[in-house]
Length: 315
Length: 57
Image 1 (cartoon, rainbow over the protein chains, first blue to last red):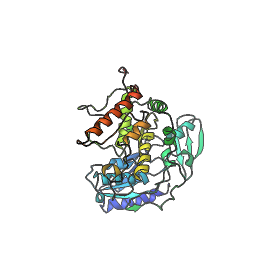
Image 2 (image 1 turned 120 degrees about the vertical axis):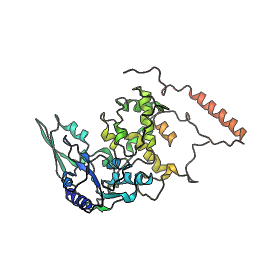
Image 3 (image 1 turned 90 degrees about the vertical axis):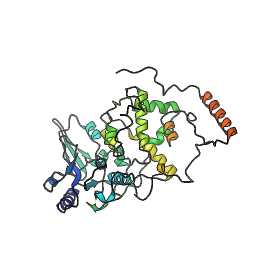
Image 4 (image 1 turned 30 degrees about the vertical axis):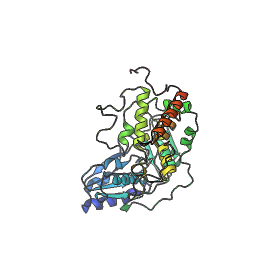
């Protein structure tokens, strides 16, 4: 996966040099270890900044919406599905983007890694299979496969579904994964247990809205939580308000969420906010046989009517 | 899906109900309203999704 970068740079350089695109959206090294930051590369010289490793978990499709330039974008499997969603929702035109597809092998969960470190990680060196972390008084070598973000570990669409250029050969997709184990566990709980489970899950939320900001689906000019006329949801730290926010945020992603994990990755409190969106994803699959962002040619189930839509809940 | 999610989150099944009644179906309207009120009364007042007092940080 590390070797992709040469090809990524080569494609980016070519696209910029031939003026096929005005900018390339990719990753450069962040100021902290294990934190790459998104960057807009506008000149051929700046292409050197680009990096590719296991810390490119941010969903770059988030930076596409409503831009007028011709854009080259580096896209993992999930990013590409979000680009498709943007195309379906008219947030970007297909011929305005040049998609540089990157077959993905999963991104590193820095919280998982940090939990194994004895103190602050000052340096992290990646090879194809291992991750070596170093701090002031320790050094450890970890297996990269075991350090994946949970959504990456259960990912079944690692290859980009749509692309103009491919930075490497496609990787084999995982097939033997149970995507909804955690959702089923919650579904099986009695009613009050479910309530308490989410009460507990969301209790640490500070309402920073990082989950919303990191999400490529959340592009409304004014989010429902920020609106004051009418005020859709209370703005306090009351558990009821917090729950309403999370519940509605998730519901706005129904039939659109690709489980890219950007929300969970962004959460400073480490809340598993994906448990809500995953339930919607599971229902979409079961009720409508729908996976978000797989093709630009099909309308999502929640904005179309079909005579055979499930309607058992209507009396 | 909304119903599924709200029940997943811990609201009792039956608390949220949907029905489709034409303006010509007065008897169905009465039936549904009675059935819904009976069911909700049986569930009792909902106490979870209520702000008991404003939480001040």
